[in-house]
Length: 240
Image 1: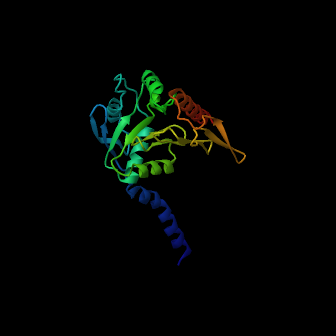
Image 2: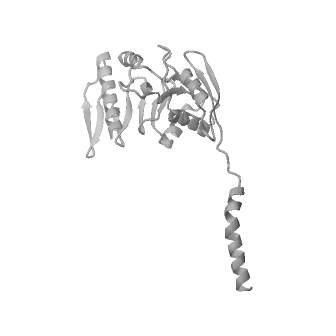
Image 3: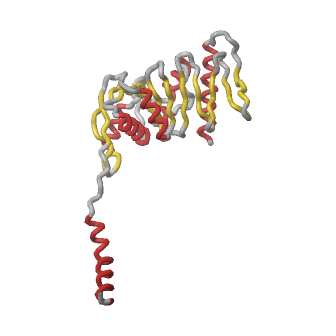
């Protein structure tokens, strides 16, 4: 082929390449739709909260009202990251809907729950609009595992209470069963309570108790102390 013709063909191809690239249609981002029921108010939300342009402001305002503190009626601008986290878990596990047990909490509501309910952190992500407690009608355990694999924030597992916690804070996991025994991942290592109610950590391969209770049942006071230890460990983890 004539060298001048060949160079002309190359130059023509380079000149038209940008126009060809622009002609390729962009694949649109899937719409994010949620179907939710608020356990305490009976209200429902069914709609698209995010499109290819981002979160839809009026819908996010509706969600903030839906996720309000039902004790006081107070609202906060919910962190879209935790809403995305929920939508991602639902999509990954084929959930068609979720029941919301707890979302935003005012500091007063959270303090009240911390005094009366085991497992409520004193500096909970719920107070900042970054956390949701949800129930799925099927495969709740599978949803919990999927959420932890995503590593998008905190995931708490409450199997005997029938719900899971997700938040958009630091990546960490914890489990609490009905007796209060459970685990919390702290700096990548699990904190555990053994059958004696001892909070255990691993130090240089040795399992050392942080808190001893013996073999007797835990008192309310001891359970509150245990909750504070868990909250303290979670706080330290967030500071890293």
